[in-house]
Amino acid sequence: MNDRASKALAEASLPGEPRTYDATSKRSGVPLSTLYHRDHGRPSREEKAQGQQYLTPPEEKALEKYLKLMADLGNPVRIKCLPSLAFCIARRRSTIKKAAKPPNKNWAQAFQKRHPALKSRRVRAMAWERHENSIYNKIIH
Image (cartoon, rainbow, N blue to C red; front, side, top):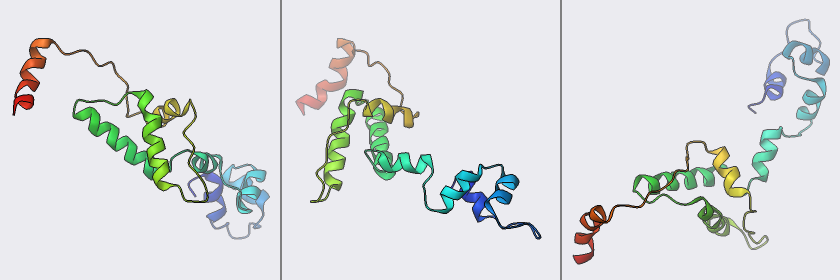
């Protein structure tokens, strides 16, 4: 109920103003047909698109949080690995009635567009001198 049409329908009409779609349309600047369709249950484009996404918004938020955590720990996840992570999440959610399908080939790029906080960057190779200093003790002990 964040779109302009839903807000215009929820507002009270002015005293003496008829309670019609036409009057509400002129007052709010929202097209008459949009008001009619929203009043009769048609979702907005954003709501419809959200319902068609592969992962639900809370699942996407959790995946984004995980990706940021991995990047902060120094192991950024590659974009090509995102679909397999999303598929694992979707399999856990799926019920017996409907088997989970893997995301399509463009899902990872669309996910990245929806979450601009995730920036892809090149990971450079670590110099061997630094590599030895950072992991030697971890391997020995």
